[in-house]
Structures are given as C-alpha cells and as structure tokens.
Amino acid sequence: MTSPTIVWLRRDLRLHDQAAFVAAAAAGGPVVPVYVLDDDSPKHRRMGAASRWWLHHSLQALDQQLRAIGSRLILRRGKCDAALAAIRRETGARVVHALHHYEPWWRMAERAVGKAFDLRLHHGNFLLPPGTVQNGSGQPYKIYTPFWRASMQQLPPPPPQPAPRQLPAPAFWPASDNLADWQLLPTKPDWAGGMRETWTPGEAGAQERLHTFVGRAARYDQQRNLPSCPGTSMLSPHLHFGEISPATAWHAVADAGGSVDVFLSELGWRDYAQNLILQCPDYGMRNGREAFDALPWRHAPKDLAAWQQGRTGYPIVDAGMRQLWHTGWMHNRVRMIAASFLIKHLLIDWRVGEQWFWDTLVDADYGANATNWQWVAGSGLDANMFVRIMAPLTQSAKFDAAGYIRQWVPELAELDDAEIHDPQRRPGGYPGKIIDHAQARARALAAHGKMKEHG
Image (cartoon, rainbow, N blue to C red; front, side, top):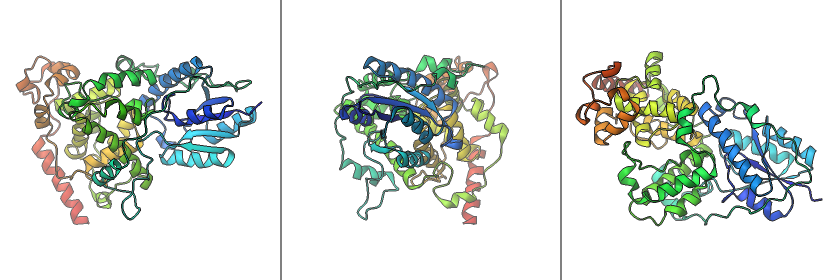
C-alpha cells in the first residue's frame, strides 16, 4: 500500500482553502493530519495561557471535521522534527505537506523537518507570500504605505479552494496523545468563563463571525473606532489560528462597497507585520529604531499591576484591560489607548506590555503584536511619533465609549455620558487617577528629550 502523506499543522487549523490538505488529497494516497504541541522550539515564545485555551477548542473542532470526512487528527508533543520522525518510523511516511510560517522558531523547525522529510511547503496564511512584495531595487518594504500600494498591484488573492470531501485513511493510525492530557485549559481557577461566552473557536466559529461581519463591512471605517458599537470583524483570533484564510475573508467582503477597503487594508497590515518579522526576526524584543535603546524607562511594578488589573483611574483604559482579562480580546481603538497609556503615561517599556498581551490575548500574534506595540511606542520601523501622546479622556469622549465603559467598569454605570469619561466622583470604590495626564505628558516628553540628548 502507498505510504501515507503527513499534513503538518500549526497555525492553519482549517479544511477550506488549506493548500496542504488540497495537495495531500490530490496525491491520492492515505493522509495523516498531525498537530505537534512544540513548546521547545519557541522557548520563551511558547503560547500564552489565553492562546492555549483557544488551541484546545480549535483542535477539538478540527478533529470533528476530519472525522466527518473519514480522517482524524493525530496529536503529539515535543519538538516538531522529532515528533514527525517518530510518526515516519511508525507509518513509513516520507512526504510532509505544510503551510509556510514566518516566526523565527517555525522557520528553524521547517529547516529541521526538511532534513528528514520531503517537505513541501505551501502558501495560504496571508494575502501574498511574505517577502515577495518588493520595491524597485528588489528589497522588501519597511514602511506600510508603499508596501500596501505595491501589494494592491498583485491583489486580489486567488479565490479560496474548497475543502476536501474525503481524506483517505492509512491502513492503521499512529498513536495519538489525549488532548485533555495536554492541560491547555485552566482549572484552578477556571478563569475562562468569559472566553467561553464570547468565542466559538474552530472553522465553523470563524465562518459565523465572517457571515455576521459581511452585513456591516461597508460601514467599517465609520464604526471600527467606536468601542460601544459592534463595528469590528472580531476575526483576529480565527485568522491567527488559521481557522479561516485571509483570502476567504477578502472575497467574502470585497464587493460590500462603502468603506470596506479600510478593512481590506487591515488584512494588508497583517501581511505587513509578517514581512517585518521576516526581515527582523527579533522585532518582538528589539527596538526597530536604535535611538530608543537610550529611552529611560521606569521600573514601576505597582503602576504596571494597576494597568494590568484595570485600576488606573482612567475609565477607557480600565474598561479595555478588564475586557482583555474577561474575553481574551480588546477593541482595536482601545488597544492603542491602553498601549499608549502604559508606554507614555506610565513610561513602562513597550516590551512589558507586549508580553502581557502575549499571555492574555487569544489572538496573540508575534508579528502583529510586535508591530503594533512598536508603532504606538514610536520605536518601530514604521511608527507613530513618540511625542504624539494620546489623551485617554479625550479619546474616550471622541469615540463615544460611554456604553463600553458601563459594560466593563460596572461601578461607573450610574454616571451619565458627560461624567463617565472623567469621573469626579468615585462610586463603588473606583480608584483615582494614578497620574495626572499633564504630568504624565511632561514626564514622557522629558524622557524623550533625554533619549535625543543621548543620541
């Protein structure tokens, strides 16, 4: 009998528009889908707690899909090359199909797997293959606007491919770990109740989110900055885990009209972030602009804890941080406000915030997380200026966040719209501001001045 083909899965947990499954099915022989929980290769970048919760449910959903077409998901734990080599010894598999991944640890893992297998890598997690959008000199772009302008010359992406209707099973299945034994879910305590209320991980959940978003995609630019309005797609964790392809999202909404082009450009920002980490693999740890190495960050554990717990005295910041803790997600406008507050009001290193998001976001993505934090900090290759300091109270009123604050900071729910953004009273023991905005701004500008003197 023909030796089986392995489909090696990572952040591509879907059947629709999944090129590795399409290629393996087209080969005609038996197919063994494999997911390896590899905490060794990423080292300190192993998935955070919120992502691990999502992963458990996404793997569970994918296994059910596979069983419906005559297959199943094999789970192994350890370094990917060693785990796949063990399956080769058990099954005789020599060919591995997988999608390209661009995080530095996955690129190293692909090289290791490629030494032992006929590894066939496919594209499909991004609109365009990272590294292929280049300027006239044949160099990748470092700035988003020209990157996206050049990308549009190669878009739209090809139409999504259908899921295989059947995957031939091998003569015998290799052993699989029990998903529950991986202990990806929190138990003592079980802090995931809000995530269960908010999300349905898996391809079906992704398709449902997309279907809901299609009806409002034309109003995306008008609504995406309003935390109290369901204007965003909330597709980010589904895209991160590959439960839906960006091409599927693109083709579903591209003809919506209105301001849908703004949403498509956000898919482009996701591509841009991957291009940055391909050029700068340590972008999640190193300032894109070396001058920021001299910025005098504060070590302020109490202030950091107040920010993490949503107890800063700035309602819009606190609402966002509490939404993050409860649901594993935060509204995009509020992410910028909360990140700016940590960096500029509290003068705490952006990398500290990036690590907190890495652990608490269900959509924690190395490229996007690093790129977004460095954009806010001003330290990135393409970034906002450090001296442009967001005023949280102004932002809260401007983007009509009253309803959002009432939802996530219930002790302020009795306040009217005029007062809730900057309460002078403190009902329910709500804390006072940990620092005045004007004082914080002056301190941040002084720190930036010291950095420039050093340079």
